[in-house]
Each structure stands twice: as C-alpha cells, then as structure tokens.
Image (tube, rainbow, N blue to C red; front, side, top):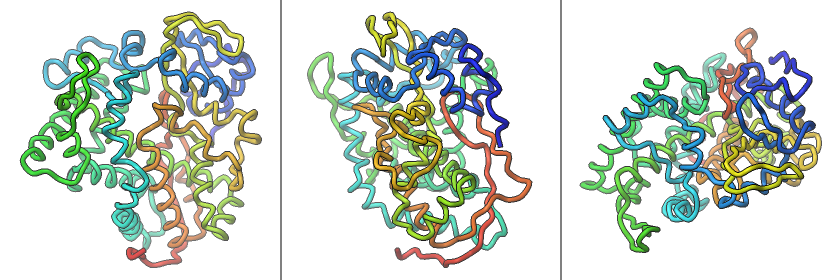
Length: 429
C-alpha cells in the first residue's frame, strides 16, 4: 500500500512528482484547502479541485475550450521530430470527439447512436459470454493476475467487436492502445515519444486497411457506419462524407476510450473490495447493489484523474481571477472527493443517493461517449464474478498496489486475486 503523501502544504505539490501520482487524493485535499483555483507554478496551470467549479467549467465549452487551443499551448507530442512522423508516415493525430463546438456536436451525433443503452443491450449475450469465457480460463487456478487475465481483455474484446476488428488482432490492438495513451503521462524522452508515435501510426494504417476492407464488405459495426455517414461541414453548411483522417481519429479515440477506462475501473474495483471487506459482504448478500458499487468505484478511484481546458476570455472562478490564455487542470478525481458534494468521500456507500453524479466520465456535452458501455460492462462483470467466485482476497506477497506514473490516469500496474470457486459457467444467462 502507499506510504501516503509526505507533503503538508499545497506549494510543495507537483503533479509530475511520482510520489504525488501515487497519492492523488491527499494532494488534492491540500490544494482544495489552499484555493478553489490554485495556480501550480510547477506545471504552469490553474488546478480545479472543487466539484462545483469543475461542473461550471464543463458546462461552458465555449468559454473553456479543448482541442486545437490546447494543442497550441500544451502540445501532446512535444518533440518536432516525433510530430513530423505523422506527416511523413501516417495521418495527422486528430481527435474529432474532443473538438470544440460546433464541430464536436456533429461528430458526436455520428457516434452516440451506436453506443446507446439499447444498442449495447443487443450485445448483452456476447458480452456476458465473453465474461464467462474469461472466467472459465482461470477459475481452476489457485490465483489469477486479474488485469492480465480479465480486466484488460474484457473491454478490449468488446470494443473491438463494436468497431469491427477481428478477435485475433487483440494483442496488437492492446500494444497500440497503450502507445496511444503514453504521451498523456507527460515527461517522455524523445526516444519514448518517437516509439509511441511509430506505434500509433501502425494503428492508423491498421484502421485504414480495415476501412478499405469494409468498403468492399460492409459489416454491422461502427467503422462501417462511419464510412457511410454524412457530416455537415461547418465552413460551407453542406453535407459531405467523413475524411480518412476523421474516421481514423474517431476510431482510435473510441478504441482507447472503450478499453482503457474500463480496465482501470475493474481492477480498481477489486482493490476497493480488498480494502473494504464489509462492502464485499453486502454485495454477496444483495447482488442488486452492484450498480451503485460500480458508480462508487468510478467516483472513488476516478480512472481519468483530469483533463485540460483552455480559458478563452478573462474569467473568475469562486473569486479567483483567471486571465484569458490560461490553462486549467480540471481534476475529476478531486471533484469526486469533494466532501461538500460527497460526504465521507473515501468510503464506498452502496446506498449513496448521488452515486451516479460523479465526474469520472466528465459532464455536459463532452461527457465520455463510452460511459454507458463502460458502466454496463462493469455491472455485468461484477454480477457474474460474484456468482462464480467467493472469498476474494489478495495473493500474499504479490500486491504492492502501485499505480502507473503520469498526470492523467489512475491505473494499477497489477493486482493478484485468490478466490474460492462457487459456480459453473452460465453462458446462457
């Protein structure tokens, strides 16, 4: 377990410090106490840690922008040589689902209908069968590396199915997904950044090859949908097909968003049960409480700890004046631990009335498009796990509960599970 954050004052906190990255919530408490919009000199950003301030910003995407403005001030790929690889070998790194209004709404309108609760329920049998097959693969073992054997493959298999990628390509997709996320950790060397970009370009070409196949042989998947849809060009007002760059950008964004967050949430959920055996007992007694458990895991651990926003004009947040051109570090994890909104924030409460009002998927029109998919995957996963294994416990001497380094995610590197086998495969459910 973590030894705790050693710092006592907000001025000592640096989000690039690995010690802080292992102890986010203690650091947030210090910053929240110091200022509602604390300027962190070490990273040159105003840090928001209070739920109400974060909600205010997220509800106003024209005043607090993302997308291109952020790339100008805080480029994700900082080395010119690495950025040049996209032009030389691939396509521009473009995330249409993160664009500013009005473009954002047009792109989301193409994706959201494929990720509604009703569409996901059409895949319920496939998802539950996948969960059971994964459990079948390790249920006779004395222990299991939970991330490697369950939390990681499950969401990757599901999002690959929805996008239209064959299951045999899952190992490659995971390598590419990890590389896509890596630059968000910040502080990469030139060599690390070049390697991450090279792998992302491999993914881009893989998506492009898949697009060519689906133009000849359409499927019932998101890529086929994107190939046959029209978007309104905001500059001309006329409809047009999506460009290859747009389709590649939407697809790789969905691939990463559709697997990484859910992987982190499932493994953090297991860790939460290790730390709170009384919560585990309540779930065993009444599995109908799994839905609120999923929300509490998302709130307490917050797989995405934060994102950027760019201040488009002079403003004031809770009495703090912030100039145009400033960058905000919006800390979802801090807002989710704000005691003003969530009393006793570190304790999972299966009867918490506002459990689903957390910030783990953002808020407003830029809420994560895969939020419903992730919630349903987690719910079905825990329902089946609770029915098939009991006595879950950490493997002695195997878990150190260390998290990945980086400013933006909350992800265990590994977690090992021991258990008692209680149920057989129930693929028919």
